[in-house]
Image (tube, rainbow, N blue to C red):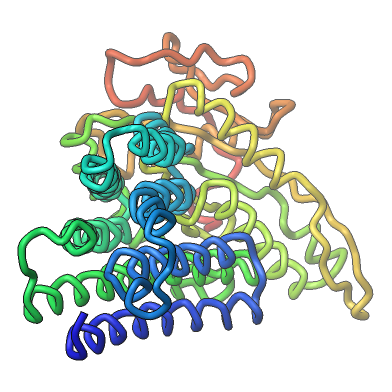
Length: 425
């Protein structure tokens, strides 16, 4: 390496280290497992660039054999660990079996393939490591783009960051293998790609981490509703319409959950109006945690929350989802009483679960069906209801026959006299 190329790669490493240092400071301020994983990701990228760019060899002159082994393993191990973290960031296990399988499988398979490459003849080890790393990065890019197609808006930026890793890894391994003569301009492009992919990926990791932290601490999501900070009813309808359009293309099933709260006046009488607002915020936080921050949650009207789950990995996941949400929301809520003393109150509610299939169902009809199921769920032990696929009648989620449908996207539950008329909203 000459002086100019050393400067170029030092600048790239400095940019990567700056992002890692920023996340490290954030980790100290708000410790969490996801923050720790983000710091580990940036440190992994830093080591990858340090080992493959030639800066380490130029700076400390390590043992040639150890450096060679590190270069072979650097790409597969870094990409594999990144895939393990990204599958959690995408919420893959909750959304899509293929996505979860590919990302989890590559997290184990890529480092194993990198280690297996060391059994090849010496001249083929670095090319094999490069192929494994590039293949893993391409898989990550594909899975992130797939998540975007399933409704995750941040995933498109993640896909762009993953796309930048391809020229970065290819260029770094070309340097490590000393293929031809990469001039200053070519190395500057590779160094820039490495810094940009690290920065862009780091930005979307941080954005979702901030969203999760706000949800965990305050229950707030985008600032719309003055109490819960949830989406408004109009925004929810727009999200549902957009989701149904995507579903025609992706052919992926999803779910809509309506959570109706009954008799909040009882809580107001017991603890005061301020306590009711505390209940709304707590319920909002619990719903968002259960469905994941990748799925929008909103307040359809003052006593009804709605959660749109863009995709579900299987039909049976509907049962688990409905029961999990109902169980979480039925836990006691701690509020401040009239004199400031802590009180625990239980919320009377019902959860209605509607399966979303590719089709042309009107958003208002789907929402109305979910509300009626939530009303019927009040009389069920689990407080969660779904429409029976054969009869269309409301059935307890834990007892319902959940099967793939060949009929319309949802079966509207039988209309019943509503104890909560629209005029009370």
